[in-house]
Image (tube, rainbow, N blue to C red; front, side, top):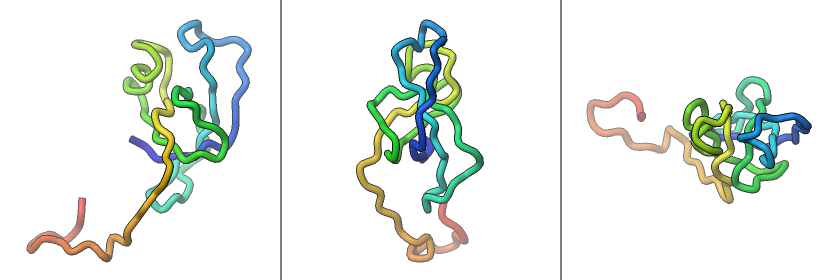
Length: 102
């Protein structure tokens, strides 16, 4: 899953019939520290997300399954995040012999 934030709406008067009735939202992908990654991207919305919401997104084939099987979708919003708690990776005690946390 990918972390993102809804930053706008996209209006499309003509769409593939498998995505008729679905909103298209402009999303900004984010790092775990909520810093932007790349440029905003259009995602199909299936969970009643809105502008300003932090969301979970899925890509590629997983995105098409979120809408209907084989829908022409490359990015879909599959969850709205209510709260985010993060910790500093430096605060994680690594097991003996490990040099980084995965």
